[in-house]
Length: 321
Ligand SMILES: O=C(O)CCC(=O)C(=O)O
Ligand SMILES: [Fe+2]
Figure 1 (spheres, helix red, strand yellow):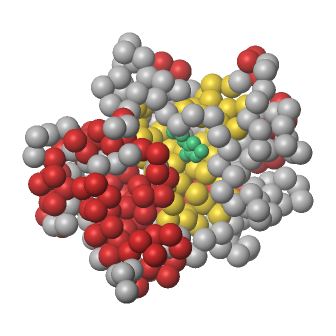
Figure 2 (cartoon, helix red, strand yellow):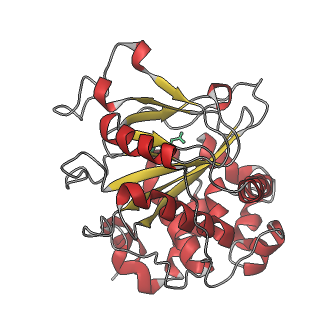
Figure 3 (cartoon, protein in one colour):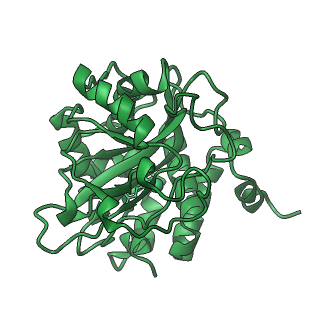
């Protein structure tokens, strides 16, 4: 069983606990400091300083990533980090942070912060993940990779600014001791642009660890080689963070657009997205059958969204003839 699968199996009655995820009450009870409504949106607008933005827009074109100073209010990151701890204590994966309005309102604010990079009205895709990395739980982040999911399409403008980024949001301070992100800057990557299929490189001095304060925004393009580190037992706090795609509004959606700041986003749609991500991202995580079946049931609860699912999932969900 993988570390991510173990999030679900902390308690003897873990299967009954999974059953409770079908009750709205569970989500409210687990994190009574947060809310679960039909329409999470508000007027959050996070604004990096002009100096931060000037650097970010140059750096993302040259080195493939950007990083701002903290812009998400501390009250928000603190409440969400606590929610992740509560979910994990209950026996759920950190990705279920998406059940809460405050998570989506934070993403709305991040979208506004990214507008100078991605253009007006940029928006999140329903493809996200959250992490709690600690010596007791998942002990390390994801290994070296390029996100490259949409690399068959044009993902950069002529000036090399991105059309789609992965935004990565630390909810607690992160540094090398608790497994912060590291990158190989794009301009130092011997495999770019001609050989993105290879992750091999030899000059360790080119690796850049990216310590980041809670509430800052990191973002990278589809080509950047990046990975999460391992958490030491001497780290003062776990690494709690979330990652999600944002794309420009002036190009076709990279996947069908399901999240709009003008529309409702009911709990069952949030749980559908989390369930799709769990089934999608981690075929190799070897989730127990009860987790797979819980995810399928959450997906089945929103049949109107099925046309947007990856084909293999549509097939897996449709009744056998
Ligand atoms: O947090 C990690 O360990 C990996 C994050 C990542 O690769 C991503 O969000 O694209
Ligand atoms: Fe990634």
